[in-house]
Length: 219
Image (cartoon, rainbow, N blue to C red; front, top):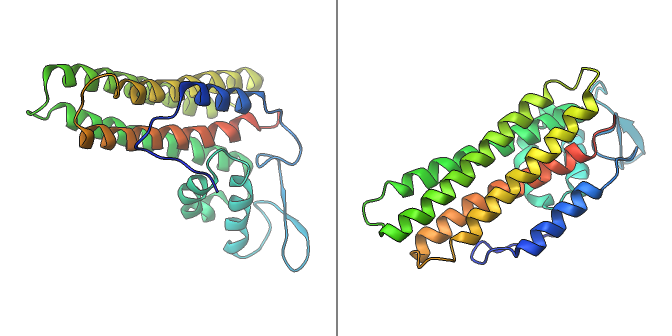
């Protein structure tokens, strides 16, 4: 079970290590983004999106897929409500993960934007929050580009599109982490700081899980 604490920012070195590990992971035929996955039940069988089985199997597919991500409990929390749509389709799993990462980034952007409009912020606090908002919005744009590239994977340049997605999504995580790190550089109200950090780091973690699935796409 993964541990994280929103009250303390992750070390940039830790984030760099996580990103390096994710990007260094080589695709393999047992990844969550292959054409099928083996689910242990009363009998062992392979399932895919066309297998006529109960929806519990599809939730098990998601659970098994999430187990290898950086933040498995967050992965399952976000993806399990979409089990009936994802079924056991690896492309739908990746696409849904990326869509949820973008949704989390938009939520973070909305909350930071509202905080920036607060009238009781000091001038220094406004500078920090504005910088954070710029980073979060850049992150959101990179995820939008990644989602657009996801729709181009049927073409002959599939490997090129995946490479772009990996670059954009990694940069998006870095932008979120930069926002979080800068919150400690100024004397920002603890309540505001923690609220911003919570939504921004949540967006980064959802993104990190989506990046894992993209890294393991078979091409």
